[in-house]
Structure formats: structure tokens, C-alpha cells
Image 1 (cartoon, rainbow, N blue to C red):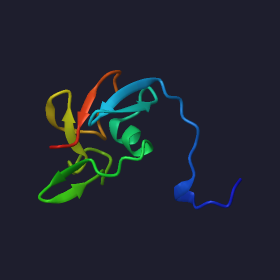
Image 2: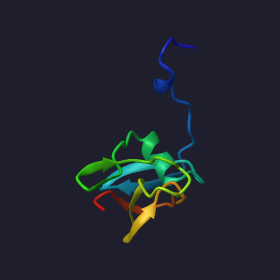
Image 3: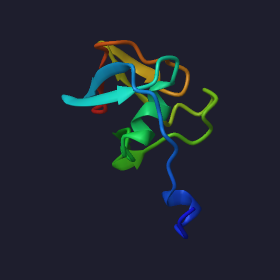
Length: 93
């Protein structure tokens, strides 16, 4: 194994589902959460509220920091939402 920082290491992922984040195509494993798929795709800012960038904090649905608009449903918590083929995610909450 290479001598790379732990945070830089990645594991192979099956990518069965495609959806969009702000018009950009993202692929994910079936059963994965939207938050997990977005993080794996390199997304670090999920929303901007109160003039600050937001991203997942608790990953269990209590903090709403990862809330985005999914298929026109605002304030959808990405850590609790499973990816679906063709879903449209907007981070401009």
C-alpha cells in the first residue's frame, strides 16, 4: 500500500446509480446515501445558509447541515436520503 495520508485513500466503489448535483452528473452505489455519494464525488459544500458554507456534520439526521433540495423538496437531509436514478439535487437552499 502506498504511503499516502489516510484521508487521501479511497476504496473501489460500485457505481450503479446516476443523479445530478447542480446539473453535474454524479454516480453512486445503489443503497448509498446522497451525502455519502456527494462526499465521494468531491463535493464539500452542500448549501449556503446565513452566508456560510454547509456540509454534513452529524450524518444521522439531527443537525440539518446537509439539507439540500432534492427533486423540488426543500430541506431534504442528504444523510437520510438514499440515491435514486435520475434524482435532481440542488445545493442552493
